[in-house]
Image 1 (cartoon, helix red, strand yellow):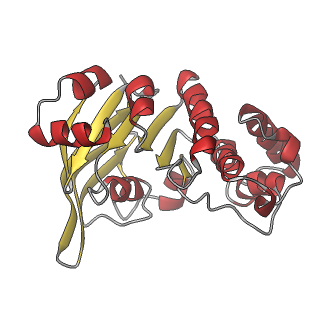
Image 2: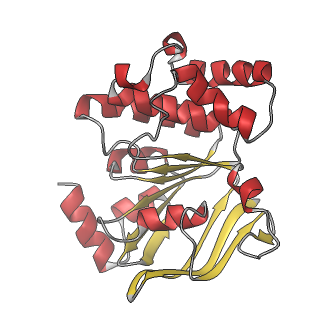
Length: 244
C-alpha cells in the first residue's frame, strides 16, 4: 500500500506540558483512519501538527517520501495537498457559499475563475448544497455550514482530508446529515483522517481506529479489534464509558 503521510517520533509541548509524546503514525492512500480518545488526549493537536497549523517540537512528517519539516520544504505547497474541516466551520462570513468554495482555488492554486466555479459546483453538488450558492453562512444551519466547509476543502482537490471533530459543534439532529456526506466520501475512496467522538461512525466507516490517551497512541487496529477485543486496559475503560 502507498503511504501518503508517515509521522515518526513526533512530539509537541507547550512549555513544560507535553501534549504529544513520540508519536508514530501513518496513513495509506484511500484509507479512512478515525482517531478516538478523551478530550485532552492529543487527538486534535496531532491533526494540527500533520497540517502544520502547529509546529512539532521533534520528529518527522514524511509526505510522499520527503520530510516536510526540513527547512528546504515548501510548506505552502504541502498545505494545499491537505484539506481541513474544522469543528466550527471557519467559513468566510462576509462571502456567499460559492465564493467560499472558489476563493482558495483562485488565490492559492491559481485556477481561473471559470475552472474554480466548475469545481466548486461539482463538490457543492456532492454535499447537496448546490442550491445555496448565493446564501451567506449566517443564513445556514450548522449542518449546512459544515457541508459547505467540506465542499470548500474538497474544491482544493487535496490528497488527504482531515476532519477535526466535525460534528461536535452541531445540534444532534444535524449530525446525521454531515456523517452521511462523510460516509459517501469514504465510500468514494478519499483518504481521510477523522478525529471524532462518533463511535458508530468510527466502527462502521473506518479502515483503522487509533486510540489516543495522554499524548500517546495506546492502541490501533481495525474497528473489529478495537471495539470488540481491545488489548489495552485504557482502551477498554474509554469504550465502556463512551459506548454506554
